[in-house]
Image (cartoon, rainbow, N blue to C red; front, side):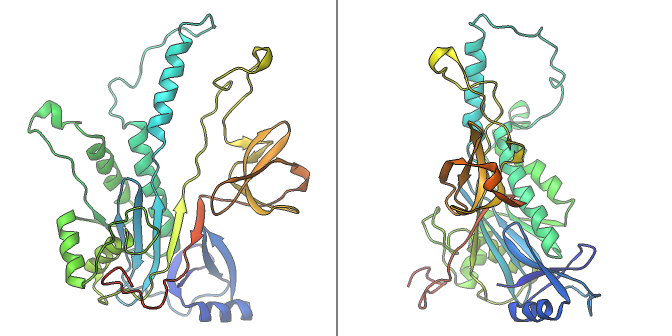
Length: 349
């Protein structure tokens, strides 16, 4: 994998090889840091050159997984497979159910107010959360690489040819239109249809695996790579298929109490983004559990979660024993290199 490089002002430069990055660090010309799970270096001196090659980011959207590939005509710098945000619609439905059940109870409530958003075009919460996650990743890549163009595989929903129906007939259409507009503020955007992506992949002699949820390069990043290669040209096969998997954190909306009361008709507080004053998702080092990230809180203790799987390690960690490191943006895991003998053109050994 190549190492992203930025200057003292935070401007992204052309990535470098791991060997050259080590020489920069050893001589004191650069400082290491991590950003979004990617190892980077920051130059402490003026770079010898600022000329940048054309770098394209291919994006393959998906319902469960999605692929991102950062490539130039000479090299493939980064391959990302990200989990999609799929839980918002269920959370909104549960909130609606609780709100309606509360109306039948004798509980204080405020006076109804007029809906100020009635005449304002808005995006459904579940749809906006999906496309905002894609935009966050695209923005993070622009902070690491001098991106020249985004190439996105277009996904469509069928229309009926009626004005009132087609105006806002599909959350998918509304969400992607918003995404294209916001993405265009970062770099120029090229839209490629799904059938064109298939032709480009067949021209390269690459095949896509049918296991959509598998954490392999041939699942989603293969399409993202052919999209990027189509925009800037380059080799027939990528020189880097190392996969970085990302999973967004899921924080529950703050609630005044849990869904079910406990003994004595008492309800505990639930949800939010802070635990004992610490932002949830903060990377910490514990003397017994090692590196973990902060989750919820109960009884004045912290919940710690595993960095790779997200599983809860403990609910009884003391705040005084935790050494704060940094706030994480998402969970990351680097997939090992494929075994010798794996053919990218066939997707199998």
